[in-house]
View 1 (tube, rainbow, N blue to C red):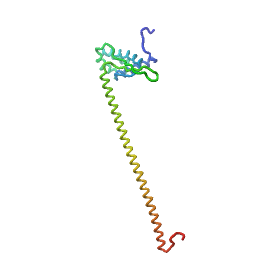
View 2 (view 1 turned 120 degrees about the vertical axis):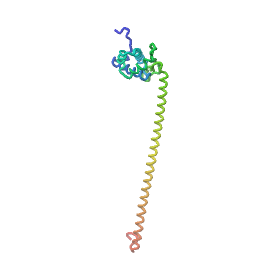
View 3 (view 1 turned 180 degrees about the horizontal axis):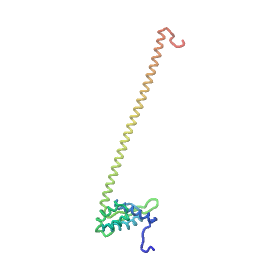
View 4 (view 1 turned 45 degrees about the vertical axis):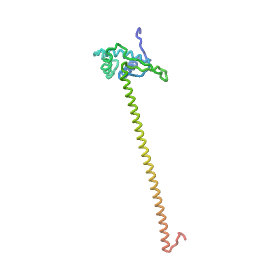
Length: 202
């Protein structure tokens, strides 16, 4: 029987559900804020609240119990060294859920789940990320402009080479015609000097 054992099944089997919540908890501990569905956030809050309470004890047994659920050494270390001392005087309520828009496609209620008392750090991180994104976009634009300038220069150089080649071919053709014309007049003059006919066949 399941008397007083209410929990969110999330339409998954137990192994899949445990790994899903473990990965989401590791991501929440690492980033302090994640975006997910309302049902997953409620199921995750039940797990994370207990993990933080265990981490506040700080002993080896609690670390082993937390490691059994998280399976991520970096997340366990951050939980015990950063979150547990920060919430030492707080008797629960370490996370909050902020509802956002509904997801397109299945209309699931989306939300933002985050740890409390991290507003300043999260705001600074978002501003830093936004500045880095703007800087990366500016660098990409500069690189794109530089590449376009190089391509334009190459195209201009190729056009200049083609034009120079056409001029050279025209000069060669003109010089060839001049040589043929000079040879024709030279042969004609030579025939006249020798007393032969001025034209062929006459």
